[in-house]
Length: 348
Ligand code: SF4
Ligand code: SF4
Image (cartoon, rainbow, N blue to C red; front, side):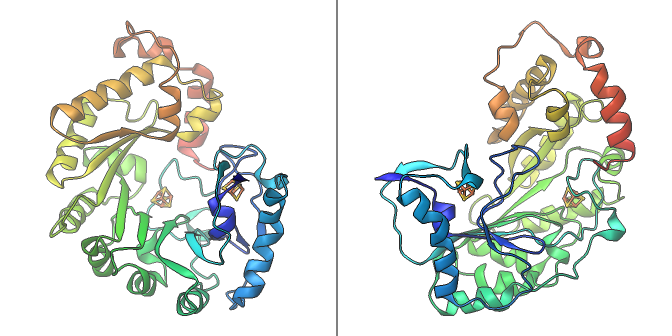
């Protein structure tokens, strides 16, 4: 038994120009610290497996010797266990592409839409090599980040290679503007689970948030994706954007859509708002989230309060606050600086 991390021992993360271990950010929970760097200036070449694991061991041996790599300090993924030090990969993150067919006002991608690109290195030759060498476990988790997978050039190949066995678990955030036949097949196989941030229940608000007029298309595609699934494979997400969609009325429309496609409902809050208030969420939003959750559960939806909101739920809050008080409770600093600047210009 010793302290270490599964992702460090068995993870690969494809970043813009590097392969790193993970995309966790222990040094700065929102912006990201520097994760353990495996290969700098990566261009898609096939790295022999012994070279790969030698590099991984440079970090993992530090844990083995009772130390902690500086990149991992403070990371919540560290735990004490009987670690399997075998040479295999069971956790892959793909986040090196940034092109997207939406332009959400809260997107953490700093690039303007026209600067986002698919002109990046290919990952499939290396992944196929690792698969053929028996390095990638059948039940590997694959997490997608970056831009929109359905318009990424290797999307079909990736899903064909890893999405059809039902054992590999692929978690895919997608805006569902483009329907992908292979993605649907991967969902039907049991491998792929999609997370769609709809953040609204109506056309106009969707357009305001996603900055593309595609609400009807998205709902149509979600209906297609929900066909022929043996279990729910869609999470529909409502990110509370203070001053934009903090409305129970809108949320009620949203959950009707979620219900119609047999989705899980996820409630979250804009990460930039959290930053502006040092992660101390105004009670008005905690109450709103609880009311939303209760509404969703009333119609039989499995509902999760996600990430930051989940943490914040442990804060004390005043149950007497109602939505009528919203103007008094919203941080004016946030509204003036963040909403105006970030929601109109939306770049960090
Ligand atoms: S401990 Fe955290 S930072 Fe280090 S490899 Fe694991 S997940 Fe990444
Ligand atoms: S769909 Fe995702 S990647 Fe695309 S703009 Fe929205 S948040 Fe960014």
